[in-house]
Image 1 (cartoon, rainbow, N blue to C red):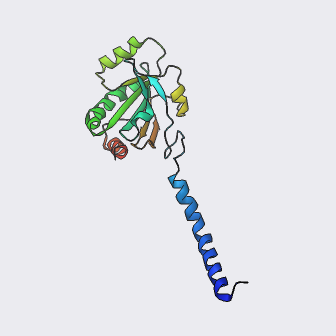
Image 2 (spheres, rainbow, N blue to C red):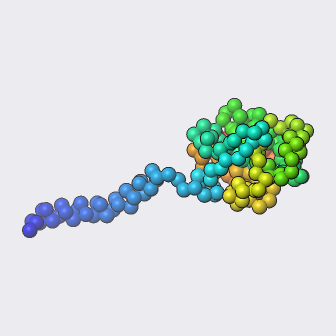
Image 3 (cartoon, rainbow, N blue to C red):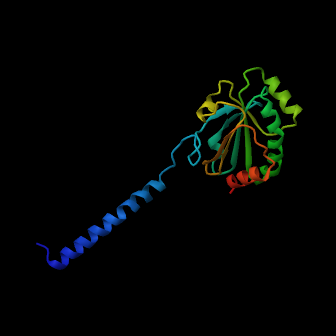
Length: 180
């Protein structure tokens, strides 16, 4: 049978373990992979889509390398037409610092309409094709335009539905955040 000293030591160790156990569990959980959800603060759901130029683009290929700006749009969407030139200006300013824009078109018609739209507005960022709106629904958007900003670690930092001027200082702060 333990003596008074051993009993005291055993109680101290038990109390220390009880106090530290939540911290140990939290540490183990923080080292685990982040959860995948289409929400701010979570790992962005991965997807693979064809590009307008015939390549295959996978979102997770950018993880650890670039901040990603995903924009859902269509050629027939007036606010998209207004927003795209501001996106192009942001792309020209930030692409050398690691920004990738993936403009996800939900147009169901021929590619020629998308190509004409891009030429007309002098847009140079990549266009991905999602005519069935699968990725757009995955990210829980139901109107255009819609944007998602994902940091270099693959975590969603910003989501917005509706037009945004990407040349404004407030927008630049959001882009700066994903390029850290």
